[in-house]
Length: 187
Image (cartoon, rainbow, N blue to C red; front, side):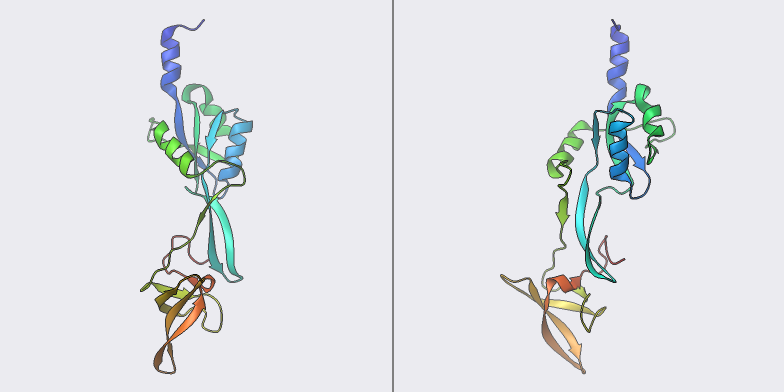
């Protein structure tokens, strides 16, 4: 039977830690930590978003925190197995200090981003009147313009275009717009 000092040390070393992964391999690293390292809890929140590419608008799925996932483990007992897992580059640390992530923070994230295998949070850019946007489809692809009016009940907006030396309003689909400077902008 373990003595109370060993039990206290075990509870002190167990917690949520931030694990660094190879680029674009967060979900693979999470699966490996559950399988190879035999961890009980790994959390990799993911988002789904649409962005403009040369092929048109395309949906992408990626980690909410690119290059990082969260894992709950005993630092003293499981650190070697975590670091040796495929697609893991190491546990976040500062010199010899491994910061723990607050359990309540992880629970808030879990409530916001469900862990079901096929369920990811869909992120859609919000466009409002006065926003500067870029046309991503049609003859005027690449043109920067301003939204003048949102058309209710439709996925369309009116934008201000300069055409033959005059400014005119034109109606375009929301699908044919992107917002400049989006974090996940054009490829």
